[in-house]
Length: 253
Image (cartoon, rainbow, N blue to C red; front, side, top):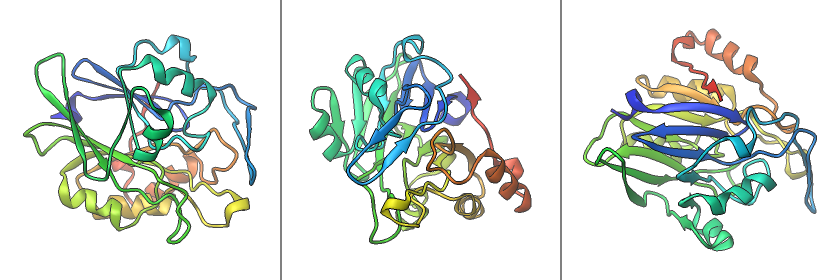
């Protein structure tokens, strides 16, 4: 099963290396140095930490799983330069149109197939996201499910920037997810409103209660000034809920 074979190494923010069946996937590439600032017409994002490894040292990446291209904390300047060095970038339809070249846009529930080096077929399925409260979505964003063709177990879910809502819950009605990589941190950008734009620790606990066989791996919970819930907050919420055995922290690259 994929969950027994996959390796996840944390690089920082939303960026992690996934290795499965001889293939290397990178989520939302962010490799700029700490203290970088990204100004828009409405707000400025501040990066607080360096990546755990320089982009030049990460090695050959086969595929990028890009939840969305229009926010700098999911795709920064060095991350954007990396995109043309990989075989394919899977992202939203709108993102693929903007990026062009090797970018492929996925609709929700659309699946693509990739031949692995051991002769199997790995599938990537786009999943729904709502990047903020109802009526305040900062999307479009996509999540991803990774699995092997003709196998309905051992799947890995990568949430992308989303809150917990019915679209996320639908993923678990369609797939038997063993590992859920949740973009957390309760991101809040005051210039666009007081509501959180990514999952809170409480939402992750509720998620774990609903899906009892799934291990939870937090991602995108630190490294930027607009995150409001840290590693310790997440861990304490799971301890208080009696679910600490379900929480897994990815190994740092």
